[in-house]
Image (cartoon, rainbow, N blue to C red; front, top):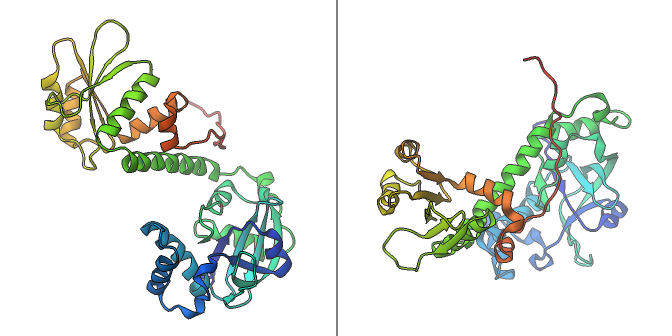
Length: 332
């Protein structure tokens, strides 16, 4: 790939504007003419003033997109625009500097482009399609930039690459989607459920798994947060829940062991992980099971539809099907 030319991706709800006027455009009308702003810091400060309710992360993300659109994009850079209207991939070249278009209905920040080629989505690998499916309005294409450039700079129309070879990016894309979902769940749990709130969530998850649970009174000194039974009879399962960010130490698990009576089983749940000594202790103490953040997410995904509605609102997920790599028969 030409190191001097970058590949940018953009999304819009106004396909007609892009194709009719041969522009790329983004919104944020309240930001006004971006030519009046200086460096990236000025963009952030202006954004914070005109959108006072924006979060710190929202300011960084949005101001960053505006800065890149107005300052970093160069004439001659390449544009990838996936149209949701007709499900095609449009490829073009930036032809003009940034300009402010106050008469536009929504997308006032604009640049002139020349649309060169249009392809069906099937012309690109699953990995390339996943990258340009970014949640950002405007972004740099990095991992699959060469694939889009090959399509743009080749003569004629690009043939359907899926007809010629197996798409090796499918497995990686599926894994990316799964990992992104797991990261989202952990972040939402950490942000919304701390302390006693996380204990209530774990109790609800255990109920979804078929256990009867009872939360311990707040402020108790027993070290037990939840008591669970599989049925009316023993064994009793004593559960301790920790929402701390740091890894759990061996001494913390030993405190759970100290609260257990003969015949009890223990369950330790954390959003983080366990230290090396704590993992060794768990391996040598089979009556206590330790669940870390990753394992907790696996259980959430498995029993998600049985969770209480209030928790499904905290972790909003939608059931979807994603492509996976085809299994091949190989010799043993």
